[in-house]
Amino acid sequence: MTRYGYTLMTEQSPPRHLVSYAARAEEAGFDFEVMSDHYFPWLDEQGHSGYAWSMLGAVTQVTSRVDLMTFVTCPILRYHPAVVAQKAATVGALSEGRFTLGVGAGENLNEHVVGRGWPPANVRHEMFAEALEIISSLLDGGYVNFAGRHFRVDSAKLWDLPEERVRIGAAVSGEQSIRTVAPYADHLIAVEPNPDLIDTWAREERTSGSGRRIGQLPVCWGPDKDAAVRTAHEQFRWFAGGWKVNAELPGTAAFDAATQFVTEDDVADNIPCGPDTDAIVAAVRGFEEAGFTDVALIQVGDASQEDFLGYAEAELLPALRG
Image (cartoon, rainbow, N blue to C red; front, side, top):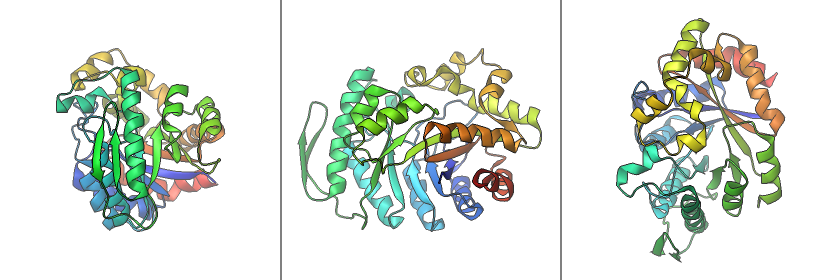
């Protein structure tokens, strides 16, 4: 049975709002919640980007049932992988085993801030593989020593581990990234309903088919379709470049320039907007038909979150599960 999630979008909401939405989303009946981990928003219009790990600590204390996950954390520049492992273990302990560490190879937008430049994709994949090896070893327990091309770890150990080992979900976009992460990841993460990813993952995964396939879908629900389209265009037109482009752009001005010719119609063609529940359900079914086991929804825009969560509880989640 498909599990349905709610996205705590750090780029579009202030920290206290997100903690409140987390509690309400659990009450509304979502199965899991994912949180983005950014230093920058995609666009100035979004206007936020609080520290995900502080908010996750708070979220563990206002929820008790939903699974939690980063979607996703980059462990190659802004964070050292040993520190990522420590953060994941701590949130795992605070949530009593409800946390999955979602990781990816990152974007220039967030990683350039530490002043180490932005490596080409092949180097990022090398760094990502080393980071995953370090994180996985630390989460297994015991002392870890590691000397690689990009990272070194000297006698590191996590002293507070949850009773159940933190699982790792890894973002993938193609065959190369799947080969990189499959030896270390329990679950696949992707943002497009691409069945080829699922098929390739099935051949490579180490969990013998027991891992989850987790997708994410933006929607902009609201009673006025035209207003919803305007909000989606203002807040979410950044998606149009695709991940090969999005990973390389260094800041919000670059995303604004790269999307200056994206129209409201372009956004409406790709994001379900307005009050039509059937349109949202059809978009979710696309992920299910591709082989995804979990789908996390993003409701675009901070102002509409409370109304969306009420709608999800009363109408959307029953329709999805029906």
